[in-house]
Length: 499
Image (cartoon, rainbow, N blue to C red; front, side, top):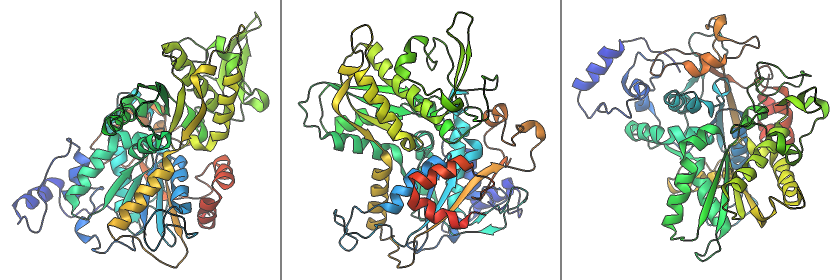
């Protein structure tokens, strides 16, 4: 976002307080977040957005979508491919015309600052909230950096007419803050998060009548999302709203390292390695929560081929060290951990649905399904420890499609669908470390170091990362290949823009 060095922040704020209320908004602190007031009132700030210049007619503006990385492209893909409504009447029912045909989308992957799920664990959830707010501000403003070297952004882009928070962790920590800020802008821009959509979808899919036998719902999400309690809290509230009195157990599993592995974070996976390394941050052998359990190795059924597991044998023939080194093995580890957590609870209720509470996880739905099928047939000492915990029909819930539905319904109700006959368009941006950072803040690969990333302070003017257009130089090639294979419609719109 462009810095407007016209007044100092203090003088600008004072001038707003004494000018007529009809021309300027009143300063209303929101959760003591300094960036909110900077965005609304401080014309000298990097984060100031000229909301009074927002177009009155927003229907031709783009739909803004952001995530902590490329995982949110699963949500974007559902938006692009949605055909649930009659485009003329708005009633439910496919008409073979894409519901968002002709729309313009702007996507932001905050790759430099991911994984979002670790900020809470590092005691810095306030910075996570600020990151979610800054992601929203990027989509609401009209400029961007053309490269990481620019000191001020010179690129120009349209503002978003609606925000879709495609990241579960950002939804859990930042949705209310973003909504509070938007309420003060007077623009009419609304924001949608994936958690409420996912919860509603889960209960809709289960079609509960109120007199079912006790059962369980699994939630597989990042450590930050699980720590927030957002899914369990929202599930409990929605069950109460629907007057469902059936016993429903909720099994929360932190997806340790899963999203990071999907985005090829070198702290979690490195296909060039052949042996365990000290810089690894994923699950390892141990007995604590989040560890690879020696006694569960047969249940995990890890793939050891092509360096997908990094192992060191002990003199006794077992393993002295084990490190996951593929997203498939992260998927297996976390699915087994979810079922084992439920087994250890002793509740014994069958899991009827599993919510994929991170946009990265649907990329490996096939592996998750495969692991679940194996666990149902897994036999140990003549018994099947997991069979009774897995319902005959189990549903994986990807909140993305339901988020897309909510986005369509919101835009249609507000009269903000574009109804263009021109082709659908996607402009995609990604955050990269700023070129102005000192070398001590960066890894040898040019990424933010772990300590620097999770140790930053809130409310400063520091621009440690910059949003630049997607390119082949700032996207992992394995990720691009996965996007091309699994999200062909989205890839077809993004690929022509890559340089």
